Length: 369
Image (tube, rainbow, N blue to C red; front, top):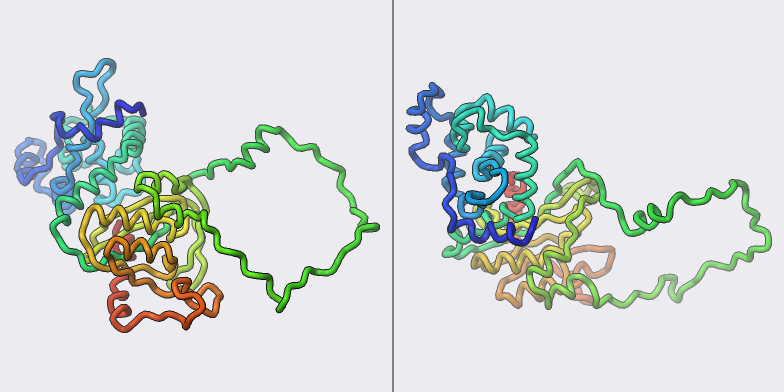
């Protein structure tokens, strides 16, 4: 998408657009349309309430007055994408079939006639435009600022959840080099003689253990302490990848796709969200999430599990005036935490343990999202 088109999302609130049905008189409009669709169903009422709450019309571009073939109404398509999870539709084809047969859904989204319904390819192009202009991020940030900015939030729970996707992995640099080099010459197979090869003894260390490697200073967490929010988000990988994570029972789970990192406030309200590849560790997104959440709301405590037990995260959280409550980690050391190396294992106090129980609201929010 060209740079000129990306500015639509910022200037769309100055352009009048044809809005779908997003008012309290939706029932009267539908019942008075003469279509005989009857009263709104419970799912239709829920969709109307959601469309009244989120400001889609501020960020949807209008193509009126442009040269060339006019595009389909992007506001109606965006409303249809909002209806997709409300009606529990897993695929876009199911949404298109439901929209053609459900007259109430069609009228709520803004289509009065069946002939004006766009094709599936139009939905795909519109979804690509919404993803590139980051429409969901703009709408979510505006909604949080309007509803939560004047509220003092007690706790922010931070966690990441797996998102499975049916996508192919992007080629790595080594794979691209092998592809450009062409097919490799196959050598004849056979047994290799080990005669004349002197095998020395295993390398031994004092005390039987190798010396501890010095800590790396050029890590992503160390760089994030002096970076801006935009630069931190650009550095995070967003391609489809394989992910591994331990569940609450301690078993390893693997998935193919992405990972959604969430900051949830009291009341299971998602404040900030970042989507990365499934191979990104939770700690790599802690500082960007904390910076993003601090710009949107005012809060006191940050609740994080053992994956966020790092000195850089603790330092950044306290530097913003918040109180971090992090579950001590046990990574095969005598000391359970890297925050107090060489000392007694750190444990949560009874007050911190009582507040840490609220961290489960982030997992509940992720299931709802």
